[in-house]
Image 1: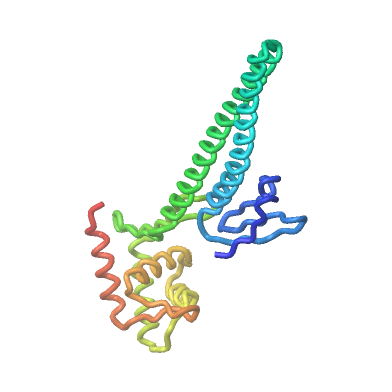
Image 2: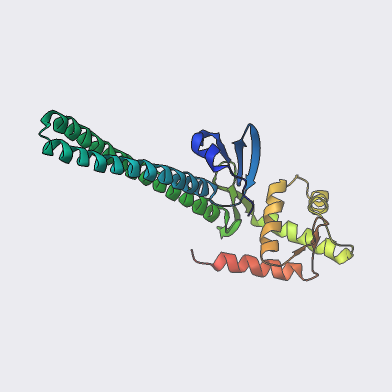
Length: 252
């Protein structure tokens, strides 16, 4: 982790921290933007730094006020011994005001720290929830002879579904078997779609073919070879039918 921070600049202007998704922070430091990159809990780190800076400065202020109150108490004693009751009253009022100010600062500090801690917790919850939302996708189900691909939309932050009929599943795996028989793999998705459309009278929506590819890849029935396409084994028909049967018999 590399952090470029100027604590004094942050303390003076907390709003100078510009926090973005995916872990990018730009901090204005003496008129220049300094980049800070980290993948998790950036806001939590910034909140912690700011809170430590504030706590250090406030402790100094409270210490000064405490010493001042103590000195005023000495003045009250000296004035009382000298029967200077007017000075006693003035010093007493000053001591009371300082005591109230010290209590007010302490109370404000507790409230600020409480809000900061709550903000950190909110950030942590968001990070955890986003990570949890992104994991485990895509998911596949088969209901009433329909293959359902459940994906996660990063933009809309919610699930979406694509449905594929048993008919499309069968013609897709048959096209895969035909390509595998030619022995010229690996094969791209475009080659597979062209193979299907060269046989069928109606054009099959590509997202349905991709759903079939997705479930077979997830089940290791086919293997992706980088950007070159997919390695399709000769026994693809048997493997694909077995996977369909497993999903069909699975109890939710």
